[in-house]
Amino acid sequence: MMSCYFTTVGFYFSTLVTVVTVYVFLYGRLYLVLSGLEKQVVRQAGILHNTALEAALASQSFVQLGMLMALPMVMEIGLERGFRNALSDFVVMQLQLAPVFFTFSLGTKTHYYGRTLLHGGAEYRATGRGFVVFHAKFADNYRFYSRSHFVKGIELLMLLIVYNVFGETYHNTVSYLLITVSMWFMVGTWLFAPFLFNPSGFEWQKIVDDWTDWNKWINNRGGIGVSVEKSWESWWEKEHEHLKYTGLRGQLCEILLSLRFFLYQYGLVYHLNITGTHKSVLVYGLSWLVIVVVLAILKTVSMGRRRFSADFQLVFRLLKGLLFIGFIAVIIVLYLVLHMTVRDLFACILAFMPTGWAILQIAQTCKPFVHRIGFWGSVRALARGYEFIMGLLLFAPVAVLAWFPFVSEFQTRLLFNQAFSRGLQISRILAGRKKDWSSKSKE
Image (cartoon, rainbow, N blue to C red):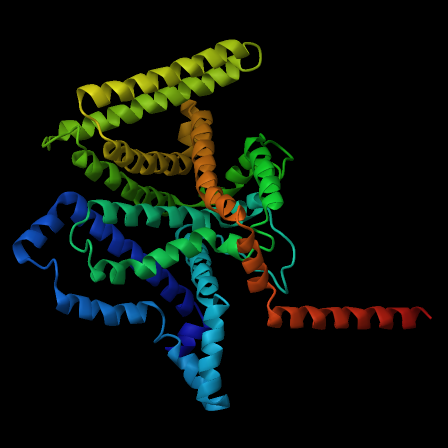
């Protein structure tokens, strides 16, 4: 068993099972919350303040924090150098944010191992070597970690938000925190670890330059000979290139996995204030009518951009202005006539955004068919909008933290600590010796 774990794929399979377990748990809770089963269980069983459950979850959270998994390392160091040194090394690792790094690497292994199982195409993935002393642009980080970490992190974030807003079992109790603390930690790590470990990641001038570069990258059009570093379209096409060579089994698995995003819409539309107590399937059908109307508007804007943006800019701007005014008018009518609330608007965003992402995933899987019916341009435009929204959600917290100078100072002290500085000095000494040896050889 140990040889299977350390010398073959056992380690990668265990990391995949760990992440899949989180997904299964959260989607199970989402079904219980949105279907109303959780409310019935709470009312009938009366377990709202179950102290025995909290005690059991407290021990479980200790395991979730990784204390028991770190016990073999502490025992090994303790037997070699003493338990005092082992405890001090363990504390130093926590202060150096080792859990953040290893949790982030968990997402990398899970993503590429799962993709290889579904579609094949195993290849070497460079992880980087040595000390990182240069600043990576926001567009570079987005390209590297978008599909492996950011998309999955936002999905888990939406699951936790829906669970918190519409759930009732663990509200205002210790149990809710004990259940979800490790998941919130995973979400925060997957979304913001690249920016935390990025040198000069919170300097304001770097933030301004990154935003300018990001806008240029995402708005550039792709084409033959345009690299992924220069255009979002080139990167987007290359990122889903594995779907061209996958088999029928991989395509079916991709479509089936995308169907999970429809669960948000199916459950949340019945929790809107404007639907009242209606539980008819007609409500779900009307929600799909809203999605069709939105997609038709996006198609109209896409066609107008191609036909009018170059020669008739005034007409195109007038068209966008009319669409915006119509959207505001619909919101006002829903607020005055059907008594739509702010919570309903927030729930609609949580319901329809995952549905649009599922449509994107299915369209990318069925790219030849979408090309034949002439909708691939609209799919690309919709994907660009989603990418821009995700980038804005990631960039906004980093930009806010960059306003405070002490955040940049703390990050610099964290990254360039004593061990890091010692490594840099050693590398400089070795580089100096190489120069001396080269000069002597020339003489």
